[in-house]
Each structure stands twice: as C-alpha cells, then as structure tokens.
Image (tube, rainbow, N blue to C red; front, side):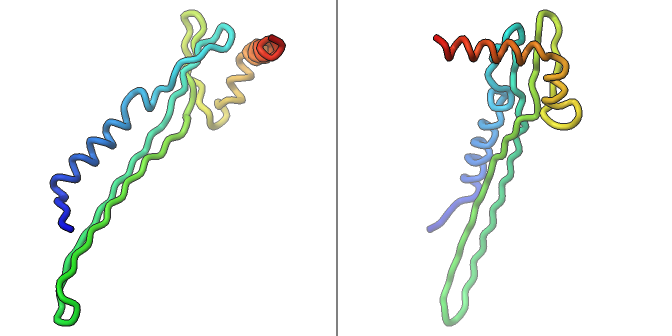
Length: 121
C-alpha cells in the first residue's frame, strides 16, 4: 500500500483548519433572565506522522507509515451582556464562575424561577 504524504497532509490540515472555525470557539448564545450569555471555548490541535522503509536479505523489502491527529476543547468562560454592558467571565481562577454568581445573584434567582415555571407547566 503506497501512501502519498504530499497529497494526504493538505487534506488533513484542511480538515483541522475547518474544525477551528469561529463557530467552534464561540458557542451559541443563550438567555438567562436579563442576561445574554455566549460560551467561549479553547481549541487545541495536534498532528503527527512518521514512516519508514527498509530491506534485508532474509525478510525482503518493507515499509510502513503512521498518522495521528487530535482536537481538544474546553470552556474558558462566557461573554455576558446586560443592556450596553459586556463582561467576560472566565471559568477558572478567583474571577471564575463563583465570581460571576457573586456579581449577579439575581441571575441565579431568575434562572431557578424559570426552571420552576417550566416544571410546573
């Protein structure tokens, strides 16, 4: 089986590039009460390949190739807007989600009330 790396590599890099588009990094907007929230993701990608060939008098000629790639994603925060104000709330550290809920306790109350109404209906 003969594999042409010069043809295969552009196809793989095109695929990885298409996966790292804005829609992958910026999630779908959702509403929580008066707040509009947009999740923001971190995307990491890696790619590796290797191949070789050889020959000896006992085994004859041999060749092999290996390819691998991966994509990892994690939420890093939310863009939160209310009226004209827009803030970024990271999901880690002291200014993470705990800080977001400290800054806007009414957000939790409204969300819980919304859930109760939906459950009752």
